[in-house]
Image: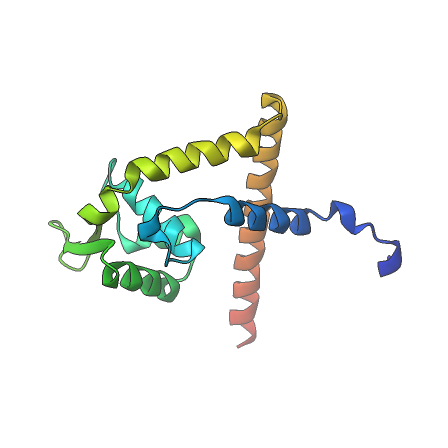
Length: 162
């Protein structure tokens, strides 16, 4: 087994991803109305805000998109509702389902969010050839899939031992 002193931490993918994530969070400028929200709450709100333009959005969609547990999604959505960013409406096809709908307050933030997202994407991609960017994105998607697969495997093993 490799001794820790001999390991070059400069190229640890997890550490680098974490560093980039923290820098991104620090530089993202959010509209004043969103300033009291956590990063995850902002991401969920932005997802709802733009996905409702294409289709109805439900809590299950949030759980799936962000790979979070039901209880976590419930807490985020309750806070967004309490703060006046979203409301829930019973779905016509199934009274058990509640559509997530952005309020007027949230809709007014849409252009600021688009502008900020475009700026941050341009900053992230600056100086990176398209071919390298495509490879990077494929690798990040594979890393995410690897972690998802490992999480599912650990859940199965945990269940088996209980």
